[in-house]
Image (cartoon, rainbow, N blue to C red):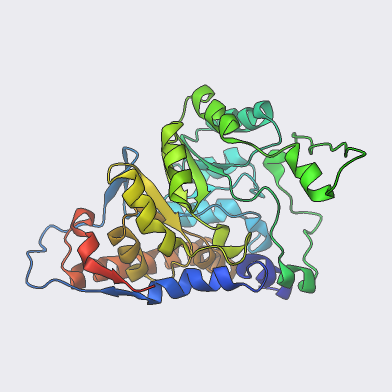
Length: 341
């Protein structure tokens, strides 16, 4: 990666403490394996939202894949398809969503951003639905961009030939600051920031499953459940928004306890090895999303690099299952992991 792209894809916000603790939290988790179990017929397959997954992880949504490899998201989708892993396509994809969908038929999850109004957000969702996407992830934790010092220092800018092509038809929100405004930031954001009522309206109006991504507090998780979200994704945006936010692995257990074992809780942040996936599942996640390792694979070798990273993670996860005495994902239980935080 160029220094600018490295700052954009791999750095975090502020002092980068949250992006660091996302990873270090996994190093505080200790697996206590079980021995001499019958592991014949084992499989890493699982089911989330009624959908069969070859392994309990997906590619997390991240923007502008063409910065890393010219074919962009279509290359990522091909790499995912080669390993039967789903990709969540970002609303800020640098390739048309129908073209990505065509090369990655298994990648049928789409990330939504709040587009400044109910109708614009619904229009984006319906556009993706018409292209064949079936499951939707609404990111709710980034009403403004975090303070990303390394991006600023590197002078990151999008080149002229890279943009969020699927959002081109949507006008940027217009602002009319009040004469008595006390804060330019608050005054601007307040005009476009969604509330729980807005999200509840979207879930009720849009007849497809919607998960909420960016939840760290158990009560917010419970509110998502109450308004009918199909599931939640415990996430701090990879430490790219609010520095000093909780590590996602730390936030996961109390959220799972609050919601109960039957509700779909996914998580992302800090997953670098197959054993990390095992740890997240033991602490209650139904599946995880992985971003930065995929970006690195794409930068190194395009679709082959993405496929290689996914294969490594799949193999490592299966080895971790075998060595911990788990024949199936259902065998990965809470008493397998001790979390010291």
